[in-house]
Image (cartoon, rainbow, N blue to C red; front, side, top):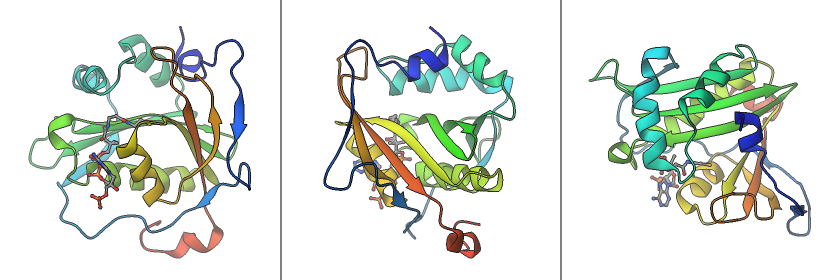
Length: 199
Ligand SMILES: CC(C)(COP(=O)(O)OP(=O)(O)OC[C@H]1O[C@@H](n2cnc3c(N)ncnc32)[C@H](O)[C@@H]1OP(=O)(O)O)[C@@H](O)C(=O)NCCC(=O)NCCS
């Protein structure tokens, strides 16, 4: 199964249902990073030599992990697919987490996002998401979207902190346990462009 197929997997009879009174209304880029002390990381583009570390995190983080072929496939679409890693400042070459997104016209589709277990709750996710948003905006994105398991409170809270809002539910989206996905969106307002945090 290709990456695209894996992440767009819906299966027969799967619906994308609007949520709430205002269906499909995206959130607006907001609050962003907290002032809590964070583990210092450098966000840079993923390289071939990062793949072993990335795959180890992938297996730790997800019940249906991407394979090396999935990452290779993404790396093969420069300009469309963007892969970032968070490298600990005190451990050059190591990988604390990574994020992947595809730029589709003016939408950034976040397709993968994970932080190594031992580095979680230390602000790495926030730094990575902030960098992803800055990069996507500088590449012309006006909004960002992703799917997240309804049970994934950690990720949902992280995304909500940045203004992502649940706009719809994809029923039985995940192939392993048929769990629903929340479809979350955020719009990048033009007034955010000058804010120091949104760069
Ligand atoms: C979700 C994930 C990326 C968060 O990364 P992280 O580096 O631990 O997140 P941060 O330390 O930057 O936390 C930022 C915010 O996210 C939320 N958050 C993170 N972990 C949380 C948890 N375990 N429970 C509740 N909220 C959590 C909080 O709002 C937190 O802000 P706070 O510290 O001010 O409360 C990480 O838990 C992970 O890799 N999970 C497995 C993979 C995954 O679920 N990826 C997302 C797929 S859509």
